Length: 145
Image 1 (cartoon, rainbow, N blue to C red):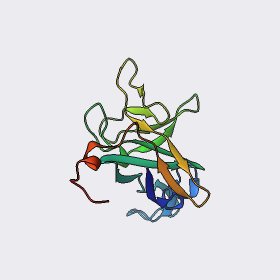
Image 2 (image 1 turned 60 degrees about the vertical axis):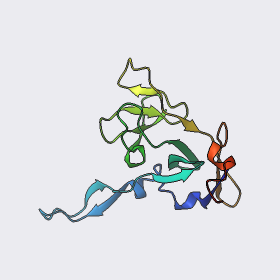
Image 3 (image 1 turned 180 degrees about the vertical axis):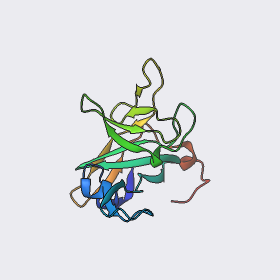
Image 4 (image 1 turned 45 degrees about the vertical axis):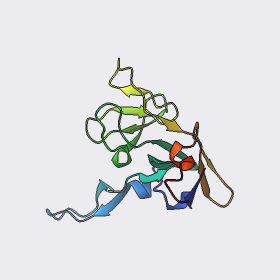
């Protein structure tokens, strides 16, 4: 299934110049580095809400809802774990989910997982997201393409 848009429109979490910016604070300390307010992108594809994140040349797709409490994962931050695994941190309770497997990395001892989807990036930057199957609504005549 093809998602319209290009990877260049996604915030790149591996680029320090996009993660932080120089801002003036209310206490007038010039040059203070603060995290930029950019987040992942929320899309609706195959009748699923998907959070998209870019880290360097890689794009990751994960189900929008945190399996712990339903938090909006597209608003979370990407974190690199000590073993170099990339995780998304849920903004509600700071649970971390592996962006390749969907498994919970923190807190330890949890047996939940977020659904992740394979993403390919075409030569022209177009993104394709893989699903196990098409949503049944596509075959019922309920929706237009």
